[in-house]
Length: 212
Image (cartoon, rainbow, N blue to C red):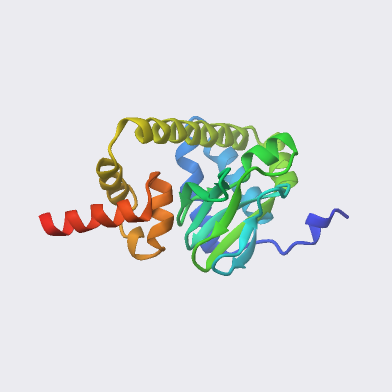
């Protein structure tokens, strides 16, 4: 029996409904019975895990073997800079999927770390299970492709913003796109995500308060 077969499987109705709500909008072109069967099969292979603040889902240099879906908490993906600093490339919240995509694709060690910024409750699935289900259910393969495409779009938009928008404009977009997040995680992670220093972010926040 494969190691992943020993993992506890998620069969809670609440998780199944949550997963269905995330996936079904991507499967409108497929028969409902096909989509429901695929989602049910997928939900059975997820199992719950909890990560404490600052612990890692994947360490830099570690090979990725799993994907996760956040039920509660905040996670970041980051990589180290040549001067020994860290750059936060993505922030994930409730309802977001986590995956060390480069490592899962290349089978090489992950160039990024995936770290909990709060206590995080996840549902986790092994990549081997996920790949098998994609082969067995064409609609899940379609869903996976669509999610990866949208993540690529988000990555391009973020890269364009970093070179075309001012720090103040990037901060305003952050507040609109991540409402309330500034009260849940340390500000230096947000500054890193915005591509500015904590001192610069402090000045922007102070200016915003003075203008209010």
